[in-house]
Image 1 (cartoon, rainbow, N blue to C red):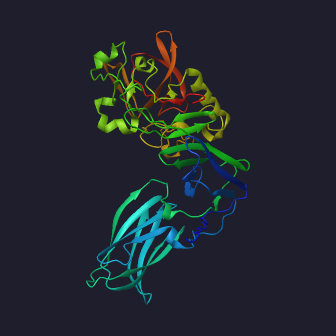
Image 2 (image 1 turned 30 degrees about the horizontal axis):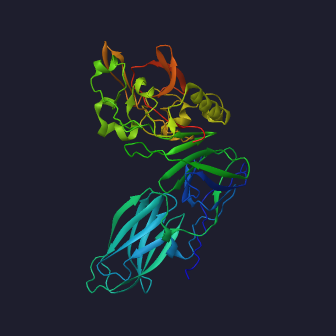
Amino acid sequence: MKKIIVCILFFLSFGYSFGQEYLISFSAINAAKSIDSIKVENVTQSKSIIIEGSDLLQLQKNVTVDVLLLKNYNSCLRIYPNPMREQAKVDFFTPVSGNASIAIFDLSGRMIFSLTINFDVGMNSFAITGLGKGVYSVSIHSKAYSYNRKIVSCSENASNVGIGLNGFSNNYSLSPELKSAKATIKMQYNKGDQLKYTAYSGVYRTIIPDVPTENKTIIFKFAECKDPDNNVYPLVQLGEQLWMAENLKTITYNDKMSISLETDDFIWENMTSPAYCWYDNDQKKYGDQYGALYNWYAVDTKKICPAGWHVPSDDEWTKLSDYLIANGYGYLGTGADIAKSMATTWGWDDEDTESGNVGCNADENNTSGFSGPPGGAKGGRVSLGKYGCYNVGERGQWWSSTQNNKNAFTRHMFYYGSDLVRAYSGKSAGLSVRCVLTENN
């Protein structure tokens, strides 16, 4: 019978007089009923941890122990083959990012190798070579966690001991042999801190922002959001709405028919039929991060989103804005200046910006998890009567499904601004698209 494996986690933090103590549990509904793992980010303090979906999260003002203690380290670190000959691979999980030392000791306790590496949160892997015949101890240690494991070498050819990094994966779903039993995980929290939970269940990923004020259960809604080109989109749960957390990049309608590609600027400007393009006609450079640009005629087909999803109406965009404003996602927690909380932390121009603007200190963006990138736009006379693109880095612009005479309502955010702007654009413009889950789907 397998041993019950218990990982007891304690994290480095500091106590503040304004802290509160809350107990947070998690559950899942819809497409998935269980959660593999959850990334918990305290975006106010720029700290994050990874817990299992069955764990409880205890938020408290004082967390004084500074070491992640792993009892029965076999659960969180694996060495294979063991015994080894020429080489052994080491897989281990890092719950927090930062420097960690790798050391190898012989049976007498003499250190024969050491190396310090900066590891990211997630699964990490390295290979050990050069160990002669004998029994050794492998230690991985940081201020936040510590692993130890014995390794046996059967090699008759000892050489210089070395370690080579094999890679890193930011897939936060732990493999079965690296999971711990249910635990209560402590994390330091001050009143008003903004948290962001990202839950993983198989191929599904849903984000929920939160400012805890009481004990609660966070209920993640998982839903399939996969387009005909097999792009799978992460989701963000904002109030009662479930949105895509990336821009749409499909080139195929949900009835499997192809969307027309148009690369000529002048033809694009004068089109009255559905079409898409890539910024600067460069899919390789811009497609994955920024998505495709679509004219409104493609939106109006009502076939552009994955099945069960639709392009949000003007009212649905307003509902999103109202939710973020009411829940303190304006800059400094007040007001209607919510763009910074919705914009990506990357890609934005930062010239001549002021506090609260999207391009100023962009690493503070995206507390809501909406992850809106500055994807630019296609169409319009941008300068000297020429047709072309509005610059990536300067703006993000998204269609609604609602017409406004010969135009359609849109939402814009700019690197030099702080508001999500309600506006309208000509139907031939090429803008980004987000989809929202159809009610009762």
